[in-house]
Length: 237
Image (cartoon, rainbow, N blue to C red; front, side):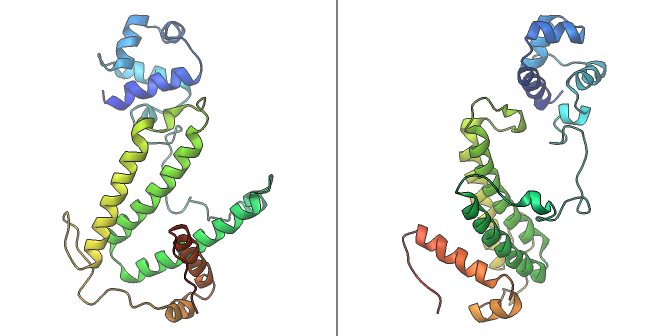
């Protein structure tokens, strides 16, 4: 049995507030045996995996760490909702910071349309994967900080230990960015093919404005805001 199983059955039990004695009794095993399963000392049979999945209301694939979806469902391009598909539910309400949240969400979302527009034109799957990994890791870090601010929130959603999350994700980000820069420079890295010679995107503020008229101002504002955070003030003319 893989390490994920031991971690996940332990976290599921703790999420529900069950003692090891209660869970063992409900699952029809001794507390000592359940303890061994949760510590990864002993491997269980398929019957126990199925019983535990039914007991905790999750799929066997989730218990085995094969999917992050508790139902066991897999996600495809077709069933991923569009960013604004939630309609009115997507509008942030509440305290005074909501307007700022909506503004920054739009700046980031619109800027991503340009980034992925450029990637689509380049047509390099490895480059798209590495840049996507970098951006995904940024979202991971921010979401985990928000999620973990309340110590009562169960950490079963994450496989990486809390104290290692920021460091590991930052390291993975730097690797992804380094790979992307190599590919953009025409250098093969880790078995990934780079973009072709002379294929680097030709860009300028004017060209971006012409090709992405709906999103260009968002990107320019994002650049300005980001450099302001770096202590550099510069305005595009």
